[in-house]
Image (cartoon, rainbow, N blue to C red; front, side):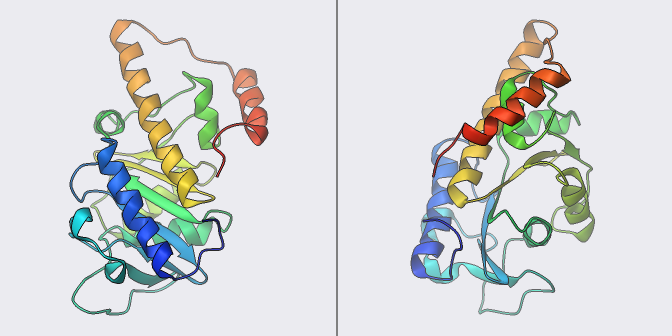
Length: 219
């Protein structure tokens, strides 16, 4: 399934499958994560507080890419719909947003740390590091602004005292990025535990960024 996505049952099921995969791979726990995809001038996003295994395609919520959601029955969109909406509006080349609370990403976020150029896979996230979005209460406009600002020229960020968010040109690529981000965070924490990680220099990361034009995940 490749963009442009349309509001169909298979698109909605793909969102549910993505949530189930996040939990099965240990990247997320419970219902703390949320997933969205762009469908024209709107997005489809997971509902708030519904266990993934109980979710059905009709429960997936539709939210416009500007303005507030309109009531769609008893369920509400994820409390984090604002930064999903803001990211998709700010990044027209991206068609999916994945947010989760991976343990190692969250540990760094709790220490309010970024991920520097400790590995060439930093380039998978669009720059020389993985930035940290400033703390704000979950679900609010301030958090949406913080996330969008942190990811202005990046495909991912850690979120202070919260978790992590990635975007993708496709839903599959967003899931890939989230998995790679947690692997990168785990490696960084392990390297800190045994010494001082050696950072790649700017030229080395620039080379990796150029190589990513023909490298990495394929849909």
